[in-house]
Length: 174
Ligand SMILES: CC(C)(COP(=O)(O)OP(=O)(O)OC[C@H]1O[C@@H](n2cnc3c(N)ncnc32)[C@H](O)[C@@H]1OP(=O)(O)O)[C@@H](O)C(=O)NCCC(=O)NCCS
Image 1 (cartoon, rainbow, N blue to C red):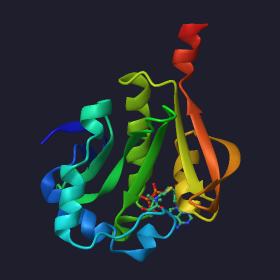
Image 2 (cartoon, helix red, strand yellow; image 1 turned 60 degrees about the vertical axis):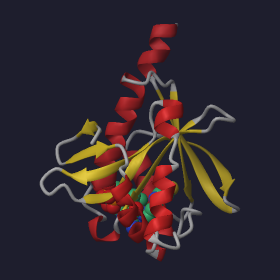
Image 3 (cartoon, protein in one colour; image 1 turned 120 degrees about the vertical axis):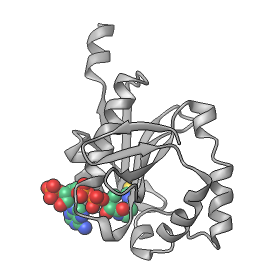
């Protein structure tokens, strides 16, 4: 098990093949997928294959990570950074099982990912995108100090683009 980050209540670790079971069930919930553009997996095996083929850690040195509760080791979702190899942009994403919503877990995990992105990965900027109607997601971005940049269309839906810049890096450069 490769733990990347720890917060007060959570640890974030690299995905493991056994997570296929959780991925399958996470994506089976229409409420979780509602504002994401993601589709369900057909089976645990298909979700496991997705993890097996997940290459971001190897290619970029970072990626999305499993979010687990420290006190029980329960997998409650995922959060992390994804690099678009065409644009070089890095975005922050998150999914949490519905029975764990509104506990502040997404914000706690997301804040840790942003700090890691700036302090360990030396990123200069991280973006976040959310459908306009996805208030929970926009709240998480705002609570992590992302700023509204512009309205966009994302997966054919009205959406917002939020950005956070690494001020420390900017100061170092100037
Ligand atoms: C978005 C998501 C990850 C938020 O997870 P969470 O752990 O419930 O988020 P938090 O508890 O950290 O809440 C963050 C803020 O949003 C608010 N919030 C949470 N759910 C909300 C909702 N449905 N409507 C409005 N506000 C909401 C919280 O109250 C909190 O603000 P507050 O501290 O001022 O009260 C979760 O709802 C989810 O997995 N949704 C489905 C997947 C998804 O849409 N991902 C994002 C795609 S862009």
